[in-house]
Image (cartoon, rainbow, N blue to C red; front, side, top):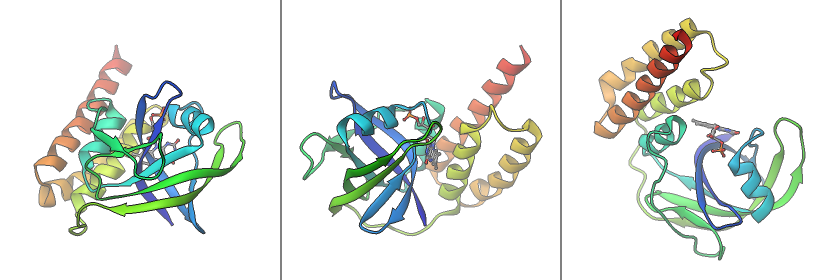
Length: 189
Ligand SMILES: Cc1cc2nc3c(=O)[nH]c(=O)nc-3n(C[C@H](O)[C@H](O)[C@H](O)COP(=O)(O)O)c2cc1C
């Protein structure tokens, strides 16, 4: 089971970094698998700690992936002295890296949860949030994907946006659509 989360890590200089990341649920914690190269990977390898944040704010996923809005507020973690969490998360797990399996493409960080905290209620699933997540994954792979397939899948996802989105999901979806358009314009010029 993979939970789609926002992973917060910190550089050696103490700079917080947020990244949407799939966290595979394993016994006692998570398996995080950042592709090379990535700041999350560098930070995890150096600091050996992270926070796995659970949020239903689609703008954070879309904002980080498109670069339209990367600096979401953070707050100090509770147990891990050097770590930060997403200030507006619904809940978070603080994790320590127990073991790393290196790989030229996608190293594997096996993490143990040392603290879990809930901040706000989860108020149910929303199709538009799920559509933004799927759209964000498409946008993160624009350089690898056939443009017609991207259009087909974005068109399908837009139905859930039209039917079920609130203002936050619409804003997140607009960021994704603008990024697709920018990518096409750059490719054409
Ligand atoms: C829902 C979702 C899940 C993602 N899961 C992963 C993942 O498991 N591993 C990964 O390397 N990137 C994943 N990505 C893409 C990263 O968020 C993105 O490439 C990010 O920039 C990571 O690089 P960074 O640490 O340098 O910011 C995911 C993106 C989304 C939208």
